[in-house]
Length: 281
Length: 281
Image (cartoon, rainbow over all chains, first blue to last red; front, side, top):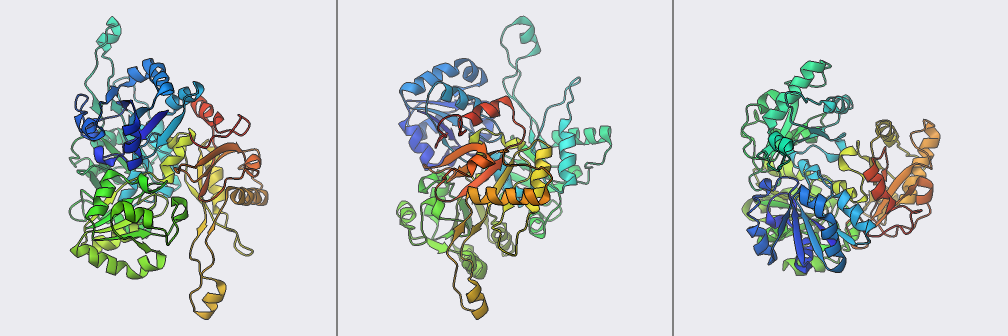
């Protein structure tokens, strides 16, 4: 059996009892390192908090390992219980659908243990989840690569009065240009897009298109380390959010659409001008 | 401190360690009964599984109680730790924003413990969460009240190739017509919309509007008791889903938009014609 277990958003205590029981049953436990473990208070060599809680060792599975050794992991799971741990929900912002498909094709049974993900935890700011349009991803711009397909989606959502969740780019284990040329594996240091970085890119793209999808006065909500004990949630205009120090990763933004009175009442608690933007709800 | 604690979707074991620790700290614990506790394997007088796990008694708080006695609950939370338990995530399909707003206005501190909700757990069928448009609710039609504002939203999502999550109506503690006339409180038995009920209503509305937003050949995914051990996930046309017995509540449907190859590969495992629609992922 392959257990794909969501760990939630904060730290080791966000696992569910069902998830913990499954981990304890497993002979071998992997943790995915696609997305940031940093946000989880973990570094790649700092899995000991988890290992202590589980009473067993945990193997870090980075993208390469999952892609290259998926069949090994899955054949282990054919004969015994194997756990694959995922920050957030297994089917949240990052997909593990591919692993499930491979498992099912090999006849390996799969059980999923759900948990919170960014997709529902943003609800904490008071904007109703059923009033969100399509989610967008904002990639790091480079000198030569500035893709802006998110603009049209945000514009569409805003025309309909819907909120837009913007997931911000994460670059982990990107090979250096040099290593690509030499065929030798060396990696760039990890990069996590900040809210101010994202807002700058958003405003640049608005300026380029000039279709008034949003502007620097548009209300947004910035989230840092959502679901952690030191999470930060601040509502304000794009211009205001540029001036806020949100601290470490992960960050995301919601561009606010039309609001109902209850949504507005709740947002006030997080608003910069409404006094002190709160850290916790 | 008021702790608003998500319980997840399945049973008492879906609480997180963080949530369980918070419950254990609380002097008084309420559980909301807005949405169905049935889906949670609980009846209104069957909270004993939870009480055993928590080592304390749990008070069922129905809609009336929360509306009428919110101030009492909140003033308890001013002087001691009070827990308010919610099936799913505190800000998932059902909103508890109002309680948070009231608490904050009274100066009561609030801490939220997130968990899985329907909004992210539907990811299990393989359709990517960032490819969903606006979520819709489908209300029970009556002889005289057949609101269909969901039609336009579904149509819009489908034109954009997006998936649509349809949340199905729940009627719990609805006063009987007789009791409304007599001013005496008597309630209708609880009702939960089934998938076939929803599909019938969807097709009726399509027939009325005739704008080809969808038809009985449109692919959907039906979910029953999502996140529970006996969950059922079946993909098929609306016509096919009409013939499936999904069993007890809660049900919901996703109307499938344009699909990517990986989404299609995953849907096959749940497809009626693909063999046996699976119970678990």
